[in-house]
Length: 183
Length: 273
Image (cartoon, rainbow over all chains, first blue to last red; front, side):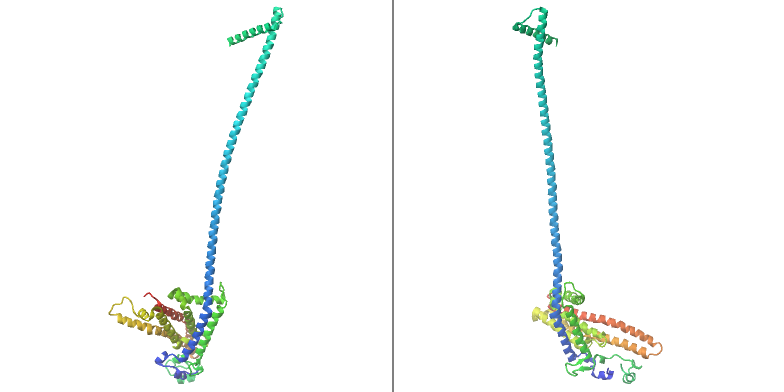
């Protein structure tokens, strides 16, 4: 390094330090232009592009997430609607089944009633018929017994049928009248 | 370093009364030419360092942004953070998004050029910022000055631009001429001058401080008697601390220069007054 005095001879003094040296301006300008050119043409466009792509990616991601959320919401709504519909349908079916069951029970009850009445009626008819048969048989038997008895008592055979039956009838009518009277 | 005897003979100032104390002087900012002496292409070690740091910065950015990925890694991350700082903290903050993007190339270049030139102050082997002589600050201040005038005239037309820069609304009629004169002086002279001088003076003072501390440390440690070497250690520690501080100043001055440039451009092209 040179000594202070040697340097001092070249160094500007006083206001002189505010006068730019031509070489400083020249090399400064060269360096500035180099840096400006590189940054302007090569670096900043790439930085700008990277930033735009990143913004796109982030915003795109947010948009996609929002779309997915909307879709999920829609599916949920649909599902809820379907569930409500199914519940409604189930309730309707249950009610229908209840109604049908009740109708069935009523119908069966009516049928049972009818059958019972039929059976009862048939029984009554049977009983009546049996009674009539029995009554007729009895009448005949009693007639025969009575005539037999009377014949034995009177000692004469009452063969004549007409007379026989007239007597029997009269006898029976008398009996019935007595029965009626005693009642 | 000078030879002690030689220095004793040549620098008989009170501060350098002892042997070999190196006083920081203005001469250090004007080192010898290495090449092309006396021409406009004259290269000194400072100018060569400036060229080198410019190429290094350009290369770092080019390598960092060579293949930009969606998710930045390593060099790209650093380059993007650096660009984003100027974009968001200076350009968008001052000029808004549209105009900020328009002037971004100049502002980014300005910031990193000034920062690169400034950190030469603490680059071992260089130790003087390229911005501590008037040349570079002058050049950059003139570019900023030209940009805001040209863009202002483009935006408002010549008459409109003169009005924008000089007429302050709400000034009493009697004072108007004075205010107009002051505003014109500000736009034409004071702004570029303050830009230029602030940068140069800061970097020059930083260098002088560092020289003072380190040459003091060297003198006290090597030649001081008694307890003086202890003070020399203190001086060295202060020198290291101020080296860190110079790094901060380098970034701060680059930021201030760039921010003021953005603000001056905004004042010139803005429609709201």
